[in-house]
Length: 296
Image 1 (cartoon, rainbow, N blue to C red):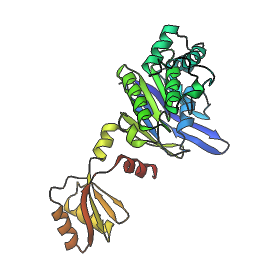
Image 2 (cartoon, rainbow, N blue to C red):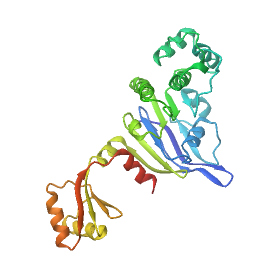
Image 3 (cartoon, rainbow, N blue to C red):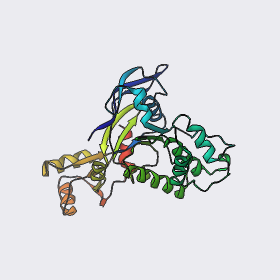
């Protein structure tokens, strides 16, 4: 699968602060790449670097496999932070203004507005739009010029469940037509419904890149064991099964390897002098999965 966006060691400084610190990411053709991180992690700055809205201190950016960034960026549509709209103008008039930068006929503009669900807004001004309508108009503007890639910064931030679903449906429909996405979001469960790959950022650095299939495998489930000595419990189980996958969180041990009979685990620990306070099977939530990695 060909790489659409590739950075190597890209760094951006604001004073002495490393907003983006030697980040190397790869977004492949057809991806819905979810960029995850706390506020201030560097997600928006990274997107601005890709779009040429900020200049890196060091590192390289390659788009569509080439080094001609000015030409390649014309194939990318974007919505960074909040859409910049002309509040006293209609959806069509807003699109018409932006079409001077990414040429489109009136029929094409109307077709895009219909696609994002704004085809019947008539003379209603953008300043009277709901937050969801404004976000959809921002995406419609990003679609001018028929981009191959869309970079969306928090596209569902502040939306109600209906608005979130509308944006999600638009993203999935465009992706089915071959559009590649790079999306940042705090709504992990929502992003989990559409993302094919993830990049996890913390303090300006890329912690990990991981596929949605790998995340699903990690979150599939575990056996939770609460004891008075989690490290002794871990060593006891590791001696029992060398291939066992388990992680320690304080006084809690999460066994991620399949265990057919949990009573065997309890007996092993008790016989080793470990007190078992709780033992139960549970799923690892997507939120907990990412929070653990963001804390690394």
